[in-house]
Image (cartoon, rainbow, N blue to C red):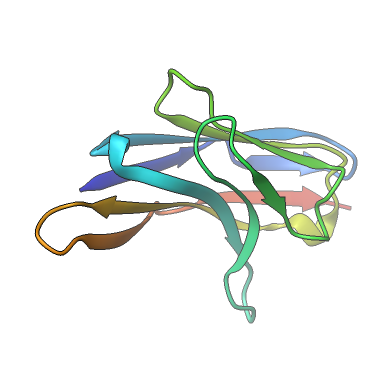
Length: 123
């Protein structure tokens, strides 16, 4: 099992910056992918960015490329999302996500979600 807790959300003006943090606990050694998703009312949850392993390959939504940076330091059970040049359309609840695989029996894949942190960007 993996537990995820987000923090760092808040209210910021257009052009400002925030850094989101995700603390992972439990069977963190079994995690092979982590990412950030966001969701606004009336829209489906969408991928913002993800990273495969520490110092791994990163992927970003087109809408945040050049503005957001995802990171997962080698010796920390943490994941970060540095958000710069924020826009009102970035307003959403941001969720930490992890994928893990457990090599028990035939193997078992699991997905985990945090409860989200609110980011509000005022115009």
